Amino acid sequence: MALTSAEQIRAWQGPALFSFGFRPFFLFGAVWVACAMVLWLLTLSGAITLPTRFDPVSWHAHEFLFGYLGAVLAGFLLTAVPNWTGRLPMVGWKLAALFALWVAGRMAIATSTLMPGWAAAGIDVAFPLVLGALILQEIVAGKNWRNLIVLALLAVFTLANVVFHIEAMTSGYAAQGYGLRMGLATAVMMIAVIGGRIIPSFTRNWLVKQGDPARPAPPMQQFDKAVLLVSLVALVLWVAFPEAAIGGLLLIVTGVLHAIRLARWSGHRTGSEPLVWVLHVSYAFIPLGALAIGIDSAFGIMGTAAAQHLWMAGAIGAMTLAVMTRATLGHTGQELAANRMTVAVYLCLFGAVLTRLLVGISPVLTQLSGLLWLAAFGGFVIAYGPLLLRPKPERAP
Image 1: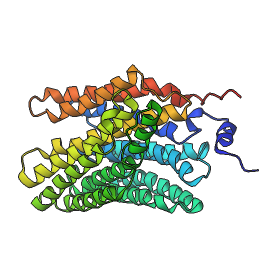
Image 2: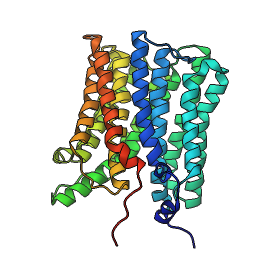
Image 3: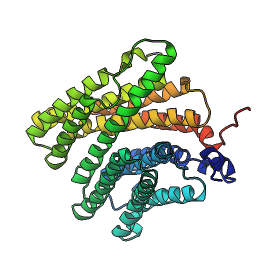
Image 4: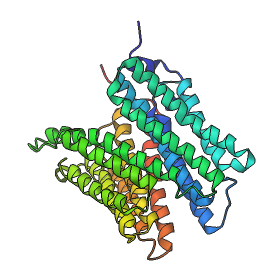
């Protein structure tokens, strides 16, 4: 007789860390993005020089976007796909091997001067390729065709990483190249697609539980599909022609549409539950970033780096942290409620984004933003690491 998911997880006799996909990738994704920030701040101060073929800014951008986000995507997909397909999750040494491949990518990039450039790039890109193949296998076996869009986004994200490596090896500075914009645009689309499913659903569940008669607009209505289509066109134009005024104007329209979309989800009624309102605040960085980048492209008013950080640190950083905290609580048998430490983690992340936007006022704010970032992800590791490292408690019969 085939094992159920719960039985398969219980049958695993190794470390609890490898009993479910979210565990190693959420925990060590957070560990890595905190460590990478420490290395970045030390590099900025001149205290260290990393033995990487990337210039410091490109390394910083790559390891946040493709390194950290790659881990979180793996944790999310390896946890969500079994629910989508009804098939068993990846458990045990197979999961450990995939995790080891991700770790190898981080080490290869950080020490790439010690090996041929193509070797480091190959090790790094191997992880999303293997992950994509595993997800494709599960979707096909489970005939879950509606989620092929998520796999398609992962494929584009992987291609963006390849382009980033090519640009780094040829032009030498990939931090403002096609690969970075393609990866960032794909990440924004992922948040728009996946967030558009989970945010109204989680909000509705919470409002029902509270006895609140208000209801958010259901997921993926015609309006949502129109917003996603406009977003796709605007992002493609931005990736290809980042300084084109027409692309900037379309990004501004995209920002307005996403703001309307967010307003339809009744987030203003969730102020008493941080696990819910943080999803709405995190999604708000999508329209804010679109407006900022659109204004910068069309009128040159804002700095490119500051505008892009609304998506990089804001939308990606905040949304991943929000998803990781909620998923960890839910899948480790905890009550779905945020304690003070969790709220502090959220506030530190938002503080890091705000101070990064104000760096032009004083260079000291760069260090402050980095320290707040460390507090956010270090706080996650301290608060949620023990839950991710120990087995889920057995329910009483």
